[in-house]
Image (cartoon, rainbow, N blue to C red; front, side, top):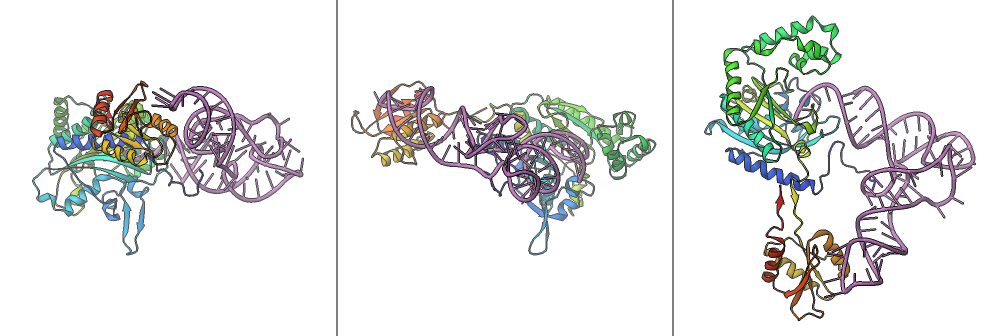
Length: 424
RNA sequence: GUGGAUGUAGCUCAGUUGGUUAGAGCACCAGGUUGUGGCCCUGGGGGUCGGGGGUUCGAAUCCCCUCAUUCACCCCA
């Protein structure tokens, strides 16, 4: 039905079975994060605007894509466009710098960005992300990478390839930045309009351009400017990832759209999503906590697009087995059926019963769509107190005592233990 | 913010150079047949043809505007 009150642009209503797939992935993400020793953190869906503005001076996500509003008290608030800044704020506010370091946190939360929607880009999307605070060691980088790729591979995607780069630190990045700007200045007339803008606003992103690949090919490589510490950091984290059978490659053109990254940046894509669409991305942000008025604290983390991961997975992921049971009844036995259905649920079955006072025929037709078997309550030629159980797949049926334990037992023999079992 | 495509039933879509009460398949509901679903048969509900304006005796169809959706760029998950 057409309605004026459509959902806002770029948002989605997620129905089953997709909603079940999300739930399945949610469980997988929590279990995996737990295994790595990460703790779940929930932060508000909106923050004071300053939380994001302070750490995103030239990032599009906070400059041009914010959902911001002023509440009745005159406070400027922003719907969370990304996870890391909010988690860092919570780290500071809750004094987690006094907790045993490092602090490992993860989240699963909706993000809001006012951008033009397109394939796998929404104005509201879910991100699963994790952050490690307090460790500047490359093993922290390697651990979050491993956590992220583990979730991906456990979900059924084989061999995620991590592309990684180092943007250098406050010691070595300025020199590189200068060299890059100088290089592009000489070619300013030959580069695209977007690149001229990048040159002024965020030179590192020149490397990201897909149009001026020729100019990019001759551009200086940040690797030539790394200080020894930055070089060692990248080499060590790659070594560690590989020691755990991770697949990781340096990509000298990889840069990311957030200002706060230092040293490590990484991204993982997937063929099913197209080249330009990342499954997840992340990096190190050693100055972030400090810029949010916390003590100087290193950190590293990633954010993963749940919808994107799901779309890369095959349909089998999160598929529900259809071992449901339908308790139908003859006229006059509605109460008995309603009661039996609930007794069967307590025996572990997924159980439906008629809620529309329908004919037996209609009930069984409905059962054929929802369930694999039907229990018919109400004696006809059968002995009083008995029910008929019918296997809707094979067509066989028999009379049983109308006892929930007996019926559940028959059911489990016929259809296995699974009723609400999630496959995949 | 820039560019392209598309809007007819819950879904997927027909609708011939403008011409009577706008159709199909699937889905939904009821009935028939089946002890008791599926297959088959019959019937039913459901549409401001995205919206507004214009041309015309007459517009789903032609023109203009608008809204929405979608794809790409930018950027990102």
